[in-house]
Image 1 (cartoon, chains in turn purple, orange):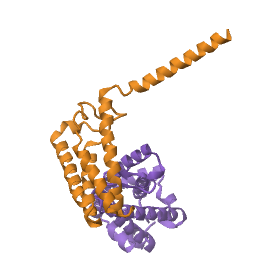
Image 2 (cartoon, one colour):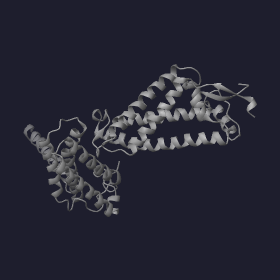
Image 3 (tube, chains in turn blue, yellow):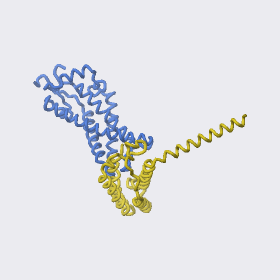
Image 4 (cartoon, chains in turn green, brown):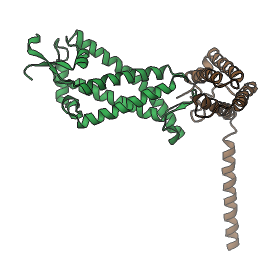
Amino acid sequence: MHQEYTHQYIWDVPIRVWHWLLALSVISGWLLGEFRTFTIMQWHFYAGYCTGTLLLVRILIGFAGSGPVRFSVLLPGIPALLGYIRTLFRREPSGVRGHSPMGGLATIAILLCLLWQVTTGLMAEDDGLFFEGPLASSVSASATRTATRLHHYGAKAILVLFALHIGIMVFYRFWKRENLVIAMITGRKLVKRDR
Amino acid sequence: MKKTLLLMLMSTALAMTNVTAHEAHAAEKDPVKKAIKARQAAMVLRSWYAGPLFGMAKGDIEYDSEWASALAGSLKAELAMTGRGMWPEESDYENYPDESRSLPELWLDPEGAQEAGMAYADAVNEMANAAGEGLGALRSAVGQLGQSCKGCHESYRAE
């Protein structure tokens, strides 16, 4: 089956480093937030600043970068998306040079969710631990309360997206016989020959 | 004629002021709202005294053992104030969404609420012993105090 596929170098070093740094900062930030204490709370803030910086970098890459990382490529058209969903359960790799239409959509959803989380976090507070985001004192008390609530919803949304992300990696690995994790480590991905 | 008009205007204005003042006062006549205000006042005081202790532990404020002791002593003094009557039934967030953030769970789970209150009292007593004993002692006491505040907020307060 793999004869119609070739391993191609798709993910360059910067985007791979970016991906794993993001994974590190989001996972550590999430855990430090969920299990926050007075002692570790400052590290939750640092993780948030790292995530925010990485998001800004990604936004630049998305507009100015080239190839499969561009937002214009990631945002699929409806026909492409529907077409891909129809072939989703075929037991073969997607063969796309980059993200599949669903993968592109997922990437944008993850970026938006993280952007939401960093933005609300800047204005949120934990008035039990007496910590507040750097912008909390610049907005009204009710805005801080809303931001705090939205930040807590965001944490749940991140957990759902994380579980989906891992679940889909497992689905590709065992159902579609494609190891996407290795691809994000080596940069080499299965691509259909005729593409 | 002019005089009568002026008199009428003045009396109307006076009457309106009276009505407004009366309404403002009436807003506090509800005994449940009064109780909510009282317990929130206690919470504001706690936060007022605890704030600088957290600030010192963070390093935002320079450690001052005398001030720290006084702050912790004030928190301890507040523990001695009776809260009886401050938590009437149905004074929760669902019945008083504009006034209260206390979740109905606080009344549905009295053991848990009691436990949370005890954890706070323990943390305050610990703080009262530690606050004047140096920054290291203050820091560890702040950790416990923060945990007790956060624990109760998470379980029993609307977001």
